Length: 405
Ligand code: C5P
Image 1: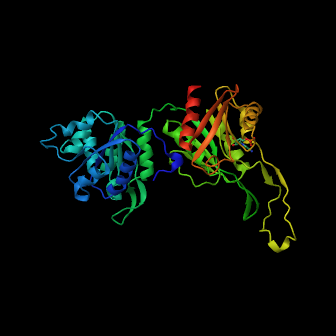
Image 2 (image 1 turned 135 degrees about the vertical axis):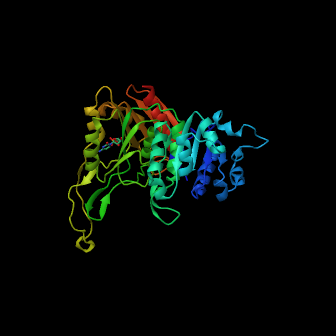
Image 3 (image 1 turned 90 degrees about the horizontal axis):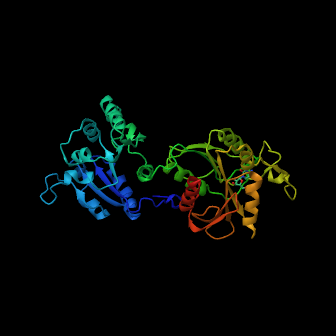
């Protein structure tokens, strides 16, 4: 479920309480809980009576939830109705029915889950899932607004087909997105207020309508940086070449194809950004001529000769415009043995704060891989080697450095 390049480990040791209410969408939450437990979180849960019509408490016990509660008047747990109020770091209601949302909004405490919610005084996340007519009903909308006003975070449902066969808004949010919202809710927001601009992925330089020159960049390192910065509270904008990476909707993504488009889109947003991290593998050259028709194989006698011209250097341009309160980080994919020296020279020439240098001709490092091995070099030449680890961990460490500045 979780892409390896986005496998952050902050949830280790955290405790999360789930309330499951009566919706068929419960089955999606099982995988979410499984992934949290697998990554070292301790998960407890409570089920409403309606939820138990869909799924038994034993299912959650078998997944590793502890405790699993459903009875307010159990003799073995006299204070189960108060339990999450003291322990867990976060309380997640998923799926949340219109009924539980109404109860939270009005302080009704007439069963175990609603009583636990009333007694809990830390962060609550609510992920609604219901029929679109119920979701759009003015009562529900008003109740959701009340929850927001109380500081409860809503993970808004999606629009599309719902289980009852109708179409509209009310489908439980994407489970991967809910996973990351839980993570964001327990991670310190140490980049709150920062505006981060990231370039990522390859560029494509077409020379006829169906052929282009490019490189194998996957965008995974850029996605790891973008999600890490968003998880830590930053407002993130990505200028992305063609990639298949997953990003949450809260991150603004501007899709581009060529280096020239990337240059224009990045440049126009630099003035409003505090931090620029340019990790796109931009094609340094582009074919000088773009043929409007597909080049016919038979029209080429022996070899096809394409003349290239230089693309603009986005990083150098941003460095040139950089003000004293902006931070600029470049990436250097090198195959030379003296890649550190080359990187240091680049910091100076392009007016950077840091460069992240990686050797791309090693296994499981750089282009397309889920892991990376880099050295981070600052403008004073100080070198910090980062041993081989997931791109998510590399991203986290890069942002640690930025935050310390
Ligand atoms: O000089 P070099 O191309 O090796 O620098 C790599 C760094 O510069 C990367 O951060 C890359 O994103 C950026 N770059 C750029 N515009 C280019 C070429 C590279 O922003 N045309």
